[in-house]
Amino acid sequence: MSMSRTGRLIVSSCGAAIVVAAAGIVVISASHRRPAGEVPARLASGGAAEGSSSTGPGQGAGATSSAVAGPVAPQGLAPTGGVPASVTESLVLQKGETYYGKGEAYFRDGDFASASRYLQAEVDGHPDRFYPSYLLGISLWKDGDLDGAIVSLSRAATLDPKSVKARVNLGRTLSDVGRFEDALKAADEAIAIDSGDSSASNVRGRALLNLGRKDEAIEAFRTAVDQDPSNAYARNNLGYALIEAGKFSDAVPFLEEAVRLKPGVGIFQNNLGMAYERTARKDQAIVAYRAAVKSGGSDAAERNLSRLGGSVDDDSVEPTSATEPSATDQN
Image (cartoon, rainbow, N blue to C red; front, side, top):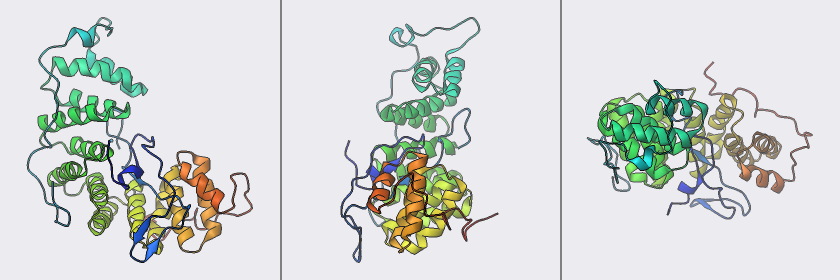
């Protein structure tokens, strides 16, 4: 799978890192370069995928994006209208159970592989129903089958032309596989349905940033934050985009607030550490990197902490503004 550099720095909404950023000298802008050894910040896709028990999963460069009629075309849809024996032979139903009911139960339990098998049987038997296709797409995504997830979420978007969540999660998944133009189209469709949806604006910003359209991406992330000040993922992504643009001081308050809202997300802490480091606040950077390492999910932070001479067990540097509400605190 071929992806841009920024695309390789994405963390999926289910919380697992797709790839870890490589260290080295990376151009930020004409006048800003990252020092050798500094591990780049990360871009997060934006909260939990929206499922049955969750509340949260082509235009030319330089052009202004607009709403696009119709969903992203499904690719490689499986035959429908019946349940193949190869799908059902290992599935077990007790009296009164359905493929959908059992698939949803596995989904709620976090067994996404089993959920996908039962939901696939439901979709094959009832291809005209929106929610089984939608939930199958989320299950496949969480189980790591991104191509299968795109097929199912595309089908769901076709079945319900007014579904924002199908298009938002489709856009996230398309970005995960590097199909940024298609991700932008899905986000634009979601915004055309609900112009005030923060998640859709966040997905739009992510696609734009991966397409190299930094100014538009920053604007999209700002819109997402304005629409939902509690959207920590949008705040992190805005901070990330500002770091990419070399605007390190501007990034700090958004990343501080992202950390305040979700202190246990390692990539948020790592990004805040980078912003502190690039604004000559070494002690605060060490505190943020240490917090990132302790919270897990950020291998980059361990390397950044080591590079600055800090260690996970050394708490001699006390937290300052890293744990205080920032100027963007809405409470």
